[in-house]
Length: 403
Image (cartoon, rainbow, N blue to C red):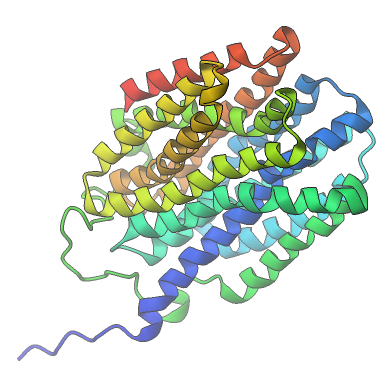
């Protein structure tokens, strides 16, 4: 007679969700402090130094270019030494760089710190969070990844109001030192919380269960890296990632300045960032959940379409469509961001996730950095963001075809 199947312990049931929430915190801190929330400092820094917007925003190209070029190496290190060591190093580095940020005196120093931010994103960013969550889940992987990726939008919601509340009292230089404490907290939490299933003698959630198509997170093929890059799916996914990252990062990192240029006060301009990232926050979880119960490809195409509609509203330059455009774009982007990662894991398996996601990240990070910089250059040339927004629309229309 066969022995009864052992029931999972409480730890096996709940610790995977602890790791999903911790991955959310990783992305909230690292993305918020390096790419999204940090934009609340922009006006103060530009006012003190008087730099051209294109020169200033070149810093973000450096961040994402560094992250992109190092992403394949990070994928290799994730596969070899695991995510915990990389996270601890990245969190420690981020706290040091933020402290130094408050002491910059030149563009050169600014650029060097942002190159360091690129290394932070490699060690404690998207790939580390997604791989960590994927290791803990077979069942409900889309939902878990959605929870984790909420953090990348949450940073844009949480940090701007905190920064804007500190600026009047401490000024931008001392405020950087105060915000650096967030990465110190991440370092401490990571030391005690971050584990993989084998560290605790556990198996991923859903191990041994028979899953329906809607609940399946495992790929029918566990492809090697060379096999994956020879597929059309891989390159279509890369193009969608590149087009969407170019558009959303350029929009997000210029939105505060764009709103100020339209005459909105700093609080309202910060509120626009909160709306963009807040709607993205909601949709990252929502569409991650939907990908577990509906056809993931249909959900993926739907997200591209929603983001395109939002960008069309913004590109129209109709002031009545400004706030709806921000909301729709954020809502579409959030789900798309989750599904890009989900599709990578779902289509190619988990054995070479680090290298595969590393390559996707390299390409989308470079595209995102170019978007931020070129949008600043276009502003300097034309005195507005009209042409830049039209570029976003063209790229997302092509992404819809690719999807």
